[in-house]
Length: 120
Image (tube, rainbow, N blue to C red; front, side, top):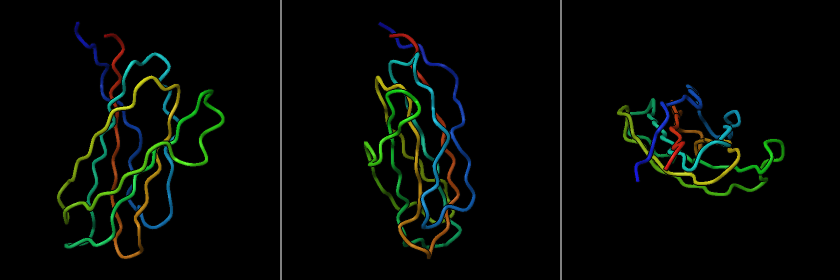
């Protein structure tokens, strides 16, 4: 079996991520078997100290999203170099991403995109 991947699609491009969660628009994953999401982040600080928090919210119908994230993880990006994290989401109707810095010291630039597997 071979997986057929669709082209990369932009989720969000945020330039001032601080200590308030910013949410992406909803991703419609109806025709997907599997979705791979990539987060690329960097800081405006030479030595960042605040971790970047990423949250994934799911929805069964595209209107009512989880109040509590389905998954959450954090990481500390390297200075001004791009730091990449990717993860898979399987068999889900719609999702939103939330990102924020765990403190007020560091500001992050965050780009996120995704690719859907449309056939397996």
